[in-house]
Image (cartoon, rainbow, N blue to C red; front, top):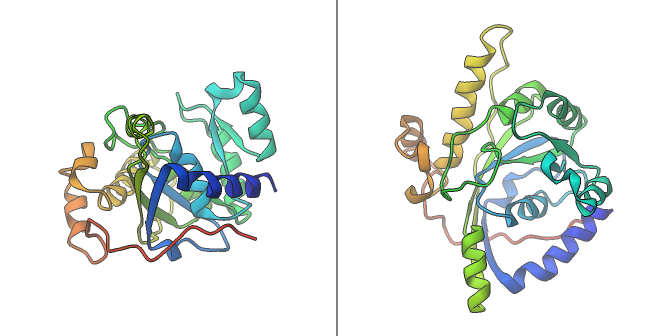
Length: 239
């Protein structure tokens, strides 16, 4: 219920500060579990993930550093969120998320673990690959452009709206996690996830994955061309 209220307020307020264009929104299932993976540019990214999922059962993950704030503790309680320690691989939190996915809930996560200080892709962390492989959930890559905190501050000072572009990529599955060599597996699958995101971004946003051969391979395939076609989708609030 509380997520519905958040989405309702966001639908009212976001158009005041941003023009949002979305491509291929229909690739996000209305039922069942999946893992949205996206680049992380600014504070708006989390609310955009909630809006994109457009479901009241979406899993919300909050960095443990915010636990000291009363307001954040209240919000996490209200949305039944999960605290996670971003300084390490928080297997306790990851297992909680896995259980939610296995119960059919969707998840939005930034594999980089935090907002990019360079506003381009940083090396991904293994959490997203670990969760998706253990839960057997499809991964849906998403690119975000125009949500940078620096751009938000600049536009607000000038009284101008942001121009946010969102591209939803093709869902894909990871192979099952082997019993041995899990470290190598997670490293390879994390690279695959990050390359899938990078292929949806323009070159200036690809960061450390700009010259990755897998990105070049994906760009040669259908539906991996940027800039996106004129959007035909709009965000709608679930009933």
